[in-house]
Structure formats: structure tokens, C-alpha cells
Length: 70
Image (cartoon, rainbow, N blue to C red):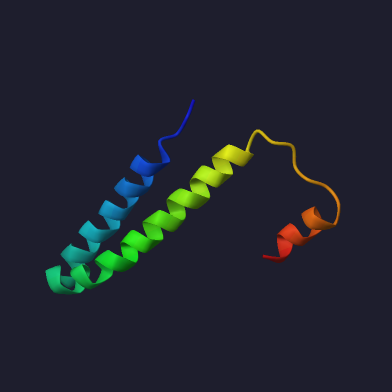
């Protein structure tokens, strides 16, 4: 089963913005909109990359050892 990462991240972003509007009002929530767009794009990219890499074997050697340093 393939996950629609764009839809999932968009729904997550909408929930955050809705909650912010309810708690802080439209003006303050509007300030978050651009930051939420940036965050949503980053999350979608990470999710797509994770899903694409899931079926690949894990690397071994020095590069794999450095993965935990991030």
C-alpha cells in the first residue's frame, strides 16, 4: 500500500493552522502560514525519501556508521 505523503502532510498542516487560529486568532495564525508551508514541504520530502528508501538494503561501512551522527 502506498501512502499519499502530500495529502497526509497537507492535512497535518491544515490541522496545525486551524488549531493556531482557534487559540491565537487569525492575525497570529496568518504569521505562521509561511513557516507551516516550509515545514510541510520539508516533512513531505522526508516522508517521500523514507518511503523510497524503505525497500533498499541498508548500507554498511563507514557511511552507515555516520548516519547516526546527523
